[in-house]
Length: 438
Image (tube, rainbow, N blue to C red):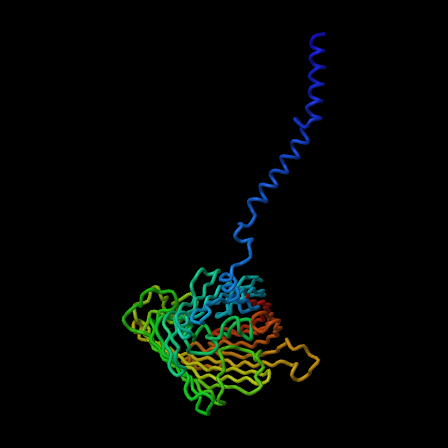
């Protein structure tokens, strides 16, 4: 009886406290707790009070100097123009079947028989100038290979005489210096691997003489370590020496870029010759640095300065009203001081493209068709016709959403290899690539 009375009295007291809001139910407690947690999360992610306030005049002035342009990145600099920095991002994704890399031997056709989809290039580019508008700098980093590709400082107060110091694709031949993001095809021709001198560390003087005249010239002359990208030391005391002379025969300079996406109202063309020589343990260069061509001693095992390399290139390029043509002929001599052997290589490519819109107005302006033929003879001492030779016949269709800054390329290649004491072998390759810059 006493227990029942106490229980009844407690229930009445509970009702009174609930009505006055002193106590709550379990469900109400859970709801209040959840609300409090949401408020806490919101508070944690709120901007600081200082960022909510209107920008001060000084801050607004700085923000007004920041510009962003699609495909050309973000730029910011000082009001007096003495400082400027541009940051760009670039992605290149590629689908290839039945292989991606160019086969160099007959067995490569079977060894590479697989479909691939790769992030071929993913890069950040930082460039600009500091202290003075003519003191330029540039860095380029590639994420897939985790390597700093380019870094250099350029002093260019005078158009006729400039100096560059650092690491970059030295100005030997057009196909290699043309950015991989400004190519007419999915990739460079089969000639590139054998003959490029690629990125080197060193110093170069360059400039333009007699601009706008029939004697319009660009010149480049430099000295480099000759061991390729990323190496800290030369393998010996010998340097690589490189020279290039480019005649702009119509008085207009042709920039290092493929396809006439700029639509040259006036024709522009160039005829150039280049020369490079070095004593090195390398017989080829690439984005991977010092390396060796097939049938030559591995660069890691070669003696310092084992190979004496002399090479020359002849080059022609022309653009006008949506049409473009580009050609190079290469010759390279490698002397092996250990084996006492001399090997001569030669190779060439010719490519051309056009935008059909400028012939038939109804065809979209973004469309371009292109074709290319290339060959490599890795040893000219093999005199039998058609033996020990590689050939490439390629076609490409480009769709430019925003020039080279955003484009899709469909490429088809017919690749042929003829080896000594072997049957010819050929195969086709299809590639689809999207290249975009931010």
